[in-house]
Image 1 (cartoon, rainbow, N blue to C red):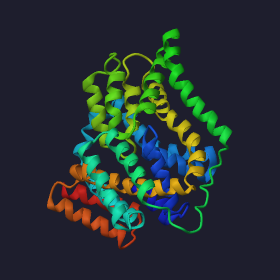
Image 2 (image 1 turned 180 degrees about the vertical axis):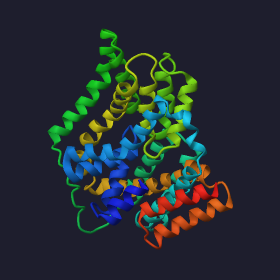
Image 3 (image 1 turned 90 degrees about the vertical axis):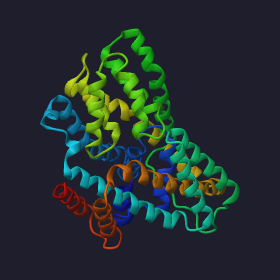
Image 4 (image 1 turned 45 degrees about the vertical axis):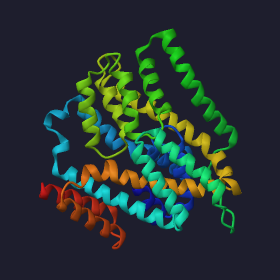
Length: 366
């Protein structure tokens, strides 16, 4: 989300800070991978359903391909998690998240009440590192904002420009519900292995709030318990998923390729990847038109002031764990992260340059 904000809000100016924050707030409430859903929403706003598909492919394909190849056999080349360049990338990631917290806090938490809400949300997320902690923090902040943070007077918010009609949105939401309820029935009627695979990964994408690591227990129950994937293979794939860029939900491509029963390999990888992201493809266009109308109302704007402050708090909690705890392991790491933060924030260096320099520095230091 830090990269998205810098690229699409600051550099390309496809949307403003308030619109971006409102999209992030919605995607935090939806089940599924929040960062991928934000990318889908930006692509949808920019170029319709084709733009959403291209945004998803661009954000997802690199890590999905890497994990599929790892599952097929490239993992024998060594543990990528031990590479110095990867540690350098993790340090740069810490700088990117810190810059996102810095920039969003300045615009979304400019006063003591909202700054306090952000700190409270961060504390709750750290104390309850589950989807309940995240959703609970957002819900509590929304109630506090609705009650104690009156909407600012000024020009009304411009519409997000969602190229989806409400009837089409309702069809998307209906499709989401039909698949969620109908796939288990189809499995029981047919017993088809491909439908069983799609059902397992679709439920993982449809029922998990908070995204990321929260999906792991559901995936483990879905593929290890029935004997489709060995637990040791599951853990090896999880380590590989940590070692590649991109959303953690692309772990599904590794699991689909590693299946014992067919479908597996390239076919299993593609089916699992599409199935786990399909709920997001239905929920984002299904919810955005209604969210766009709701966010313009005075009561909703008051609630959003609290929710957006809580989003900053959740990002602050993520800056500590897992980003900081996995990246900043020594004073040298802290110095490299500080230099990357300064390059991004004060010198306005392009992110690709900072990422390349961080990877090179990590390799040399290791």
